[in-house]
Image (cartoon, rainbow, N blue to C red):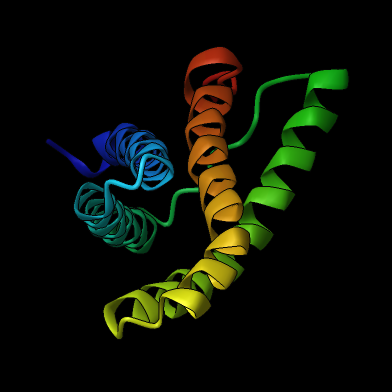
Length: 144
């Protein structure tokens, strides 16, 4: 594996986080608290692995991948990308706060924070996968 394989790894980690978030949501709705805890802790671990991989890739390669799409899809991509980046920045403290409340047994506060954290985290995970597909699979930039 090389540094150039990391975008696909990152997309896989984001997709895995989305699956774990879905499972965690289903588990808590079914009052399966222990399963919810396992799924959510796994989602945190996968998201930490994603962040480490993402930072490694960009710090080592300095890569900036241009978007190859034209027309209306370009506007769609950049709107998604901007919202993804902004929400990715704010999700880290939201996840940490929500997690700390759960670990301390403050489930009233945990639930209140999770109502905001969950949909934002889910959006960031799913759009992370979509950014990968937009850049590398569906509309890659032409080779120089």
